Amino acid sequence: MAAPATAPGASGVPAAGTGAAPATPPAGHPDRVLADLADWQRAVRAQFPILTGTDEAYLDSAATAQKPQVVLDAVQRYLTGGNANAGRGTYRWANRTTALVRRCRDRVGDLIDDPDPERSGVHLVGGTTEALRRVALDWLVDTLADGDEIVVPAADHLANVIPWQEARDAAARRGVTVRLVPMPYEPSGDYDVAALAPLVGGRTRLVAVTHVHHVYGVDMNVHRIRRLVGDDVVICLDAAQSVGHLPVSVTDLDVDFLAFSGHKSMALPGIGVLWARNRRGPRYEHRGWQGSPHTVGAVSLAAAVDWFEATDVARIARWTVALGARLTDGLSRLPDIRVLGCQDSLTLDSTVQRRHGPVTFRHPGISAADLGFVLADHGLMVRANAHCQGPAGERENSVRVSLHAYNTVEEVDRLLDVLARLDTSLTTPSYH
Image (cartoon, rainbow, N blue to C red):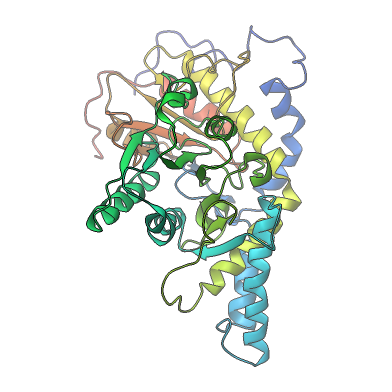
């Protein structure tokens, strides 16, 4: 590693906010938010055993989130004090497990602000991908007629692209021709609602959207989609990067399906949620024999929801957005780094909506894979590849840093310091 020619700050770039913000930043300014929530954040981080005593910085929460002690305790308690199957036995452990699974569904409904739990359904599945495939194959296919259309966000995660292709193909095998309409995007990565308007019509049966983009990190403003498509079109929301990261209200969003993964929301892997409103179209029901539920996964998810409520998801969002602003501001000062997504939201004084955790960038002289190895060698755990983006997404690999409530200002500054000191003549690290 070569030191930069000039090093105005510890990171090789001016400290976030230096010169641009007043000595006492106004309320809402990222620096002010980070200062106001500093004690809260230290208490939050202390609840994650995997982060205690480590010098490594975990910056890959969009792939999977770490688990707080209360979730680990709930799992341990269940497995050592009453592990049984649900909905099958009449003995105490079985009855208690059945109640725990039911409680998980109820708590998820509370978390996403379900306005009508008597009519809607919280279905426990393996994760976001399974949830979206079940909407496509267990529900949508049977509602499709020849000439119907599905709007598909082909620059979002593949989990929100492939299931709709599968639905089209399943319909074709029955002799029904269905057209997939590509969702248009603005250069910033946001949905282009003006361009979408003429693409939506009387044959539009479903619009698939994402709440927070897994590469660009922005809220995709899906409330605009309902206003555009009207009251009759079904909207399916991939909320994998929003549930547990910011307040999510299906009441406000007025979507028909919502999917998310437990492991991205501080629960165990292998548990996820498909929420169905059951208002537009036939009532959603799983197809086939369901078998045994993922009982310990349900226990972990209910505990995670309890933790989010106690910790305050709105505060989590304030912290991660402010921390992400510090990161994008620092990255924007590095001449060799290009941050993906909206270019008007990078600096600390930006008035444009900021990123909710994920921040993705490239270096023109170092491949994403090599840069990932470099950062890993400095104890910085990031994702460096194509991020499972759909066919209309970014064509080149990139580095994604994804933040959560347990990440610190010091970790962000350390990342900026390493990037500022990169030797651009680097080709292949010796440890690659």
